[in-house]
Image 1 (tube, rainbow, N blue to C red):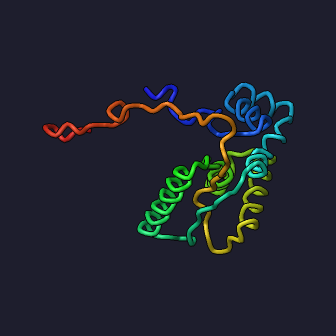
Image 2 (image 1 turned 90 degrees about the horizontal axis):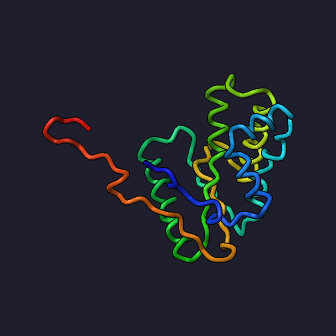
Length: 173
């Protein structure tokens, strides 16, 4: 299994308030209670907390309606950027929520309550204004920071534990 896989929270070098918010958001029961109490407004500020404590931010975008070849080029550029930043000692943290939650809202607006929809639309609008996106779609927002304290490496799974092997005799995967 992949239990324990992923980036460890301490490796993200977050300020204490953002780390506490991440811990709360990881607990579905806590999030349900916050919604019931209408107390989750501060969670909506989480992307701003990340950006405000960042040494730098980067946004990868591409023209609206981009074809697969161009998408692969953006992916390669993102990979080169990330590897170069890591090699230089910078911590790189992707901030997917502002981009992908907005996409989910556009695809399925009925899955969001009105307050969540309004917050998501506002964050998307502010992101597009901040990076002057007109006929472009955001792909990946990255937070760059100098790690606080000792650099923590997240545990890695062995490649053989996470790959699927083709059974060549039966053409089954």
